[in-house]
Image (cartoon, rainbow over all chains, first blue to last red; front, top):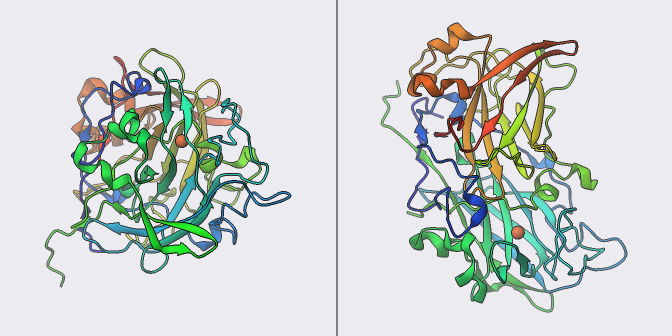
Length: 236
Length: 193
Ligand SMILES: [Fe+3]
């Protein structure tokens, strides 16, 4: 990497603000003082690198990695896509982690009190590493909607949580993938907190090409991380 | 050109995905950044994440990225061989407390080619935070280095103290105390790197 390479900045026209009044828990948790921009030193230009050694053979297959005595219940889906930077270049060999509710809208988490059933054969967590073209692929169960306490009759739309590192500490991203046509999106303050122009980037595309006959429906979801902003350097 | 994918909160249930060790699953990292073989001064860094009402944030997670005791990062952009991976991740407990076991990092060259004061790079994630927040942990026993640090120099003098962990000597070795205040008079300085 060139010593003068910096990364692009967080695009605040794309990301939600820290405080979204309709998403109530942001009110006491979002920083209120202005963020301080800092230049990029090695502290920002480096970041943790994870290899395939962190990923087990079933980690990408949530229909298998929690099995105790049978297959998990629900609609099998394939979720695949590419991790790209803002120049459209693939981000290869980067860790992608995900977690989600089961088909009934219940998390394994010890604090989840939703009275929907747990599935003894579904854990709901997984991870993989992108290939040389930045592609990832998960097999899972379509997550159910679940209620939360934000306001009367608040239900989260179906979603899968994603966590990515990218090549540096500043390319880190945690986000959520949604499904096309979900009627709950209109009422969800977490989704609606995103600027209108960028919201739809979190909605996956149904794909008959990814769909496997007799097996699973396919969804595509590309993720774009901050990219290198090469400043012209004389290399001699 | 594609545009950045928007950030979303980790939500309340990230633990079994990102810090799944209590669920009997291996995680990619925990709060123990070093093993016995890593050279350097052993330190504990601990503190609480606190919300705007002064209440502990019990469902947050912090990540640490740091150089080794020689100031080297385990990353191709550094290019030197570091003593360790240098990444830690831990949730806060029911009192909002996190705890990191590591070695004190060495000085890293800044973007102006001058040495920076030793620091840990920190990201904070929580339910109720649509974006993660970036901060740095500096060390109270490095006052001369802190004085000339370019990043600390960008911060109002009155707020710099929120970035400096207080060293205490204990029977178990040095412990640095660093609370992360998400809001309020003592709001921690957060960066936009
Ligand atoms: Fe969720």
